[in-house]
Amino acid sequence: MLVFGSLLLLLSGLLLWYTGTDTEVRRTRVEPSIPSDSPTETGATVPSAELVVREPKAEARPAPERVTQPRDEFTIRTVGADGQPLADVTMDITLESKQFPRRTDADGVFRFAPEEIVRRIEVRTRPRGHARPPPRDVEPGEREITIEFERAGPVAGTIVTADGKPLRVRAGLEARRGDVVVARTSARADGTFRLFVPVNGRFDIVLNGRVSSKSTSHWAGERFFYTGEVKNVTAGQEGVELQAHPVTFDRELNVQVLGPDDEPQAGILIVFGPTKEEPGYRLIPTDESGVVRLTELPSRPIGLLYGGGKAHDTSGLGRPADPMRRVMPRGQTEVFRLRETVRVVGTVYRPDGSVAPSVKVDAWANLVEIVGRARTDGQGRFELRVPVDALPIQVTASYGRGTGYRRKRFSASTRLRSFSERVELKLARQR
View (cartoon, rainbow, N blue to C red):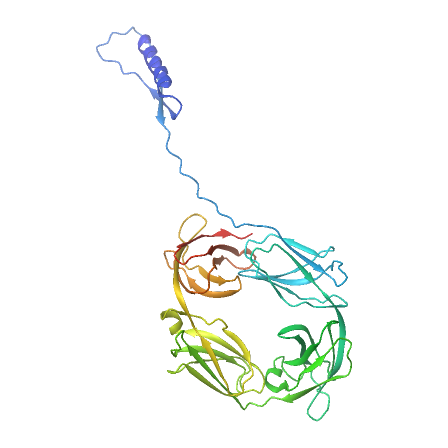
């Protein structure tokens, strides 16, 4: 029997040599079986053997691919009129899905590594002796931006009523260079004001309709005051007088929505305001001729917004190129012209490779305007209608999970240069 055990050990060694290295070891304890008619010595023990078997290794499953967003460093510098850096300048930084405030350091620099596309930078503070610059839209591919501040000088004056008396409410006013607002302030309780504008050039000063005082609400000016005149001023000018006229609600305005071939679009929601009855905004759908007739509007500029509707969802037409406007009602007709669209389809995946249902998907033109919006279905698929003249577009997907400080955000984006491409987005967690 000793010979039998030795043979088993020899067999194990032969198997080990024969199978090579692309295997895994499995050791099995083998107890030899002895036939009943086999002769054995009294008291003899039969040794057991350990059989070593090499089996082919199971193929390891590859780990899910981890996709992260590019995190190139983004630098913002703030520089004064003398070329020196300006410290502690607060600005709002707008990304694809959020906005947050930041402040430059002692060297007038703020650096960060965003996982989303930076779209806009707006300065909130005005360093002493400088004018606040207008908001800056970030161009695709920009990674370093320098915001230059102009030297500023004061403009002072008084807001008066039609009979020449000071307007004793804290009325808001602003200075504009064309359509760009370069300075804002509120008058004091006695109607006097002082604001700072760049020392170079001329500016128009107007009331902006906002009022803040103990006797009126913050937005009372939207309903009760409007300046009928515009004062053209320069830095250092004193004694400027702005006349405020009470708002009358006797204006009319027509809004029409047309397709690419001038066909009227019924059932489109138009958002406008304020009105005599409501200081906020109202929604009215267009009639069969594609028109909304608005009456009893204030004698001051109002906001108009294309709100979309059934035709926008089903007829293959997209939003107009200028969906938001601010107009003075004078009985005219404002036309919103819809654009032809094409279909963009795709799928959104989670970081582990599974499909991502109920995720918001946006299509951006020039990284500024949203030209299409959708939400994924239960299979992670989506379909967008995008204007044919919008290429190239950026398609983004994002969603959040949790609440408060525990909230986690996931996003992905890709650049689309042809409508024939099928979009596939894999979400990655934002840090």
